[in-house]
Structure formats: structure tokens, C-alpha cells
Image 1: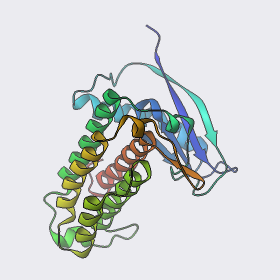
Image 2: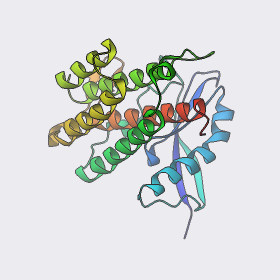
Image 3: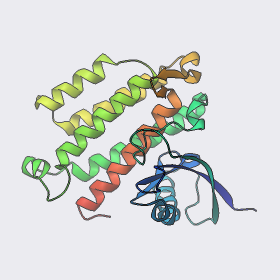
Image 4: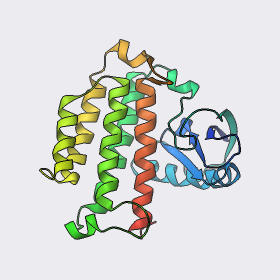
Amino acid sequence: MAPTTYRLYLDHGPKRKTTMVHVIDLMGCIANAATTEEALEQTPEAIRRYTRFLAARGEAVDPVAPFETTIAEEITEGVWLGQGVVVFEPDRDPVSRKELARLLDRHGWIRDATLDLVRDLIPKELTAKPTKGRPIAGILQHVYGADGGYLSSGLASKRAYNKLGREAESGEVDIREALAEGARLFAEDLHGATPAQLKAVIPRGQSIGSVNRTLRRALEHGWEHLRELERRLGVD
């Protein structure tokens, strides 16, 4: 049997500096680095790690199977290059109900793994300011807020999701509780999408809104910050 070929979608500026590699065939899998060359070098291990994560949760992927990669699309113009906010051609594709369910399972797994890491942290540990980067509570708040933005861009503004986010930001609700409930609301809203919404491509200035792009960015962003927390807490 021929090895699987994963198509890579690259997001970087014209000087090939800060780069994010998106493995959209394994939606959620990314590699990022200070240069394009470094990001591409890191991609095989990023694929192995992500497939191990999926396989451990029952998805039909083989983390040790041989694979190849090929560059399918490369974006070098726009804003926030290398940060994942660009639009790739697959973002315009409709999403089937079966694929939607599969990707929402992944979203839930990533969220559960994130919460497992921080569940037992005391408030002082959540809010401690590291030498570099945000406090852990800030990372969690950022993940919650970003998912709300992705959801709104693909469907519409969701009052319950936004209200819970404000309560977490003000301290009325523990951000960990908000993240758990937010994942449920995120899945509920997307499962409730109409057939027309599952295939819609909505102009958003220089970007677009689509359910496919909502799922891609939520998965990639959640995975990126799960990995950040693993490194921060010494469980990398």
C-alpha cells in the first residue's frame, strides 16, 4: 500500500520568516517556527504527535505508518502572516454532517486534554506571570474568546457563548468551567447548522466566514495552546 500523502498549506511572509504549516488533511495539526525551513523540518514530528493523540482517543489513524508530504498552497501576502489567520482554498469547501461530527469530536478531545492539564491548579498558579508570555489563565481566556470569534465568523454571534465569556473575564465564572461549557455550546451551535450554513462562504472584509474555516481555526488554535500549556507545565 502506498504511503499517505499529506498536503501542506503554508502561511508566511515573502521573506519566509515566521511560518505556520497547516496539515488540513489532519485538520488541527500544525507546525510553526521562526522560518519556513524550520517549520517544514518540524512538520513530520508534528504529524506523528497529532496522530498519536487522535489514535489514543479511538480515531482510525496509524501514528507509525509511513507518509509523505507535498506543498499544496502557499500564502505570502496579507496581514498577520504566519499566525494562521489566512484563508486557504479548502476553507471554502462545504462540510458534511459526518465530517462535522468527526471534527467536533476532535475539538472536544483537545478541550478535555487542556482542562485535564489545568484542573488542579490553584488560583495563584493560574494567574502567575511567567518570564515570557501570558499567565495560564490568560491563555485559557484567549482560547475561549478565539473560539467565539471563529464561531461568529462561520455562523453568527452567539449570545449564550458571548455572555459566558464576559462572566469568565469578570471573574464571576471560573475560566475552566467556562471552557468546558463553551466547548458544549460550540458543538451544539455547529451541530445545529443548517445545510445552507454548512456550505456557505461569507465575505468578511479580506477574509471569509465558513463552517470549514471555523472548524480548522478552532482545532488548530486549541491544539497550539494545548501544546503551549504542556511545555509550560513540563509535560511536553
